[in-house]
Image (cartoon, rainbow, N blue to C red):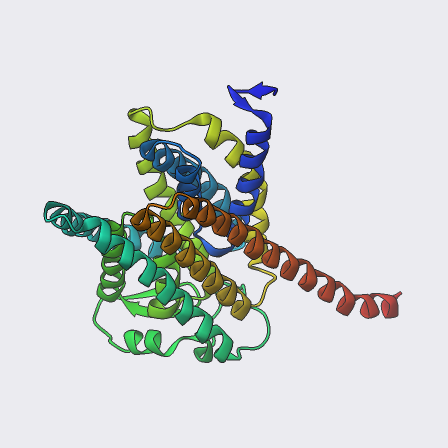
Amino acid sequence: MMELMGVGVDLLLLFTGFGLLIGILFGFFGMGGSFLVTPALLVMGYEPNVAVGSGLAFVFGTSVIATLKHRDLGQVDYKLGILMIAGTTAGIEVGKLGLEYLQHIGLAGTVVSVAYVLLLGGIGVFVTREALKGGGGGGVDHDADGEIDADDIPDIAKKIQSYRVPPMMKLRGGVRVSLWLILAVAFATGLLSGFLGVGGGFIRMPALFYLIGVPVPVAVGTDLFEIVFSGGLGSFLYAQSGAVDLSIVVPLLAGSALGARLGAAATSLVEEEDIKVYFGVMLLLGAIAVAVREIGGVLEMPILDTVSLIIILGAALLVSGAVTYSAVHELRADEAESAPATSVSD
């Protein structure tokens, strides 16, 4: 079998294709990188430090690509992103202390696994349910500097915004919220990230929308902006110890370079309620995959690791395919609406 960079061409093609799918999800949701890549590499037999380090390097590269596209669409709130970075960093440090204590008493593995599955599944069910009952019509208003419709703000975010504790911050979409509440939300999401040992994009993105109240596309773009910093720092630290495998990262990034831009562009086409449904389904499938892997470890059934990998790959293929289909469908619908007007003017 022909090899490039010491890796078989078939494996390089697999990584490139997987990178394309993950890139679409990353650009569309602002999450999905290490959450999907690292478990897949572990199941494929890579050492844990290489799987984590290479996953973080991939996340960093993809987040840069996707953030630039969201910036072009006006969907990145830099002020909010910097505040979230500050609060999240503090939360991660506290979360790590809690994790170290659980490791000391020998309960870390069990508690983290159960909490991870419950959190993934819980957020997935909540987001999907809210989207299906929301009934918000029309597409997303992508004029990020315009005023967001009050009816589009979740009730819990309205409650949080009602606490006028100075100083007040004005965010994209005309959202006004207390600086201290932003930092509190950031700290809470960082606490969960540090405790669970994950990047936390699947926590931050819904938190930005459901708790702070910014529009979903801006929540995605701002979350990606934050991941640029966390992914960059993490990959740098792992690279220093030689745990970043370029034969994994390069083909993944080659695929995600296109996928991330496609996914980011799709947020300007797909309806906001559909974005939430796809996000919820992605988390539910991820929870199932993690649960299957943990059950396999408890029962000492390695075959369940393979089943978990199949669920991860299937989830990436299913949801990225649905995103692409929805974007193409919306494009065709827009073209069909503009065609009569063009013919009349001619």
